[in-house]
Image (cartoon, rainbow, N blue to C red; front, side):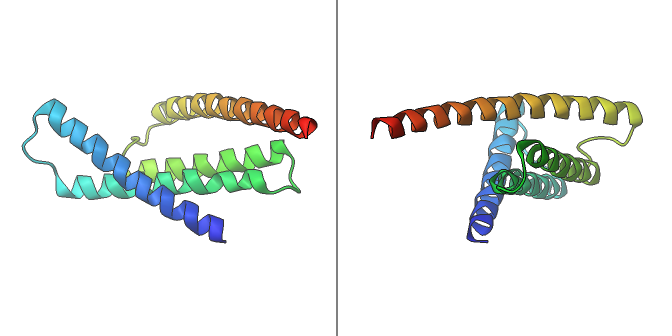
Length: 136
């Protein structure tokens, strides 16, 4: 529970920071003099919610009684459903079958690349740790 609360806090703070940073970059690059407060608040909430569940859901991979396929499938389904719920609610993705399919394919591609990179990274870290243990 302590890990869940810590990751929740970090995810929400990171999402808020990332949102403000992106808005500042947008303001500077477009020379905007004002921003829409309702849009700012809605998008900030969306970024914080997404950052929250993207930092909390990797806890699935720490459940030892599940194998990697179960962990990955549950993680993918959770982040996919939550991301699209937030995206549709806030208006990041319009509700259209063709757009939903395209966005789902993009999401899947990004997920596969991210998952593979994390898998290779942790496999490499395991190799290093095992080599260090052999030297002891």
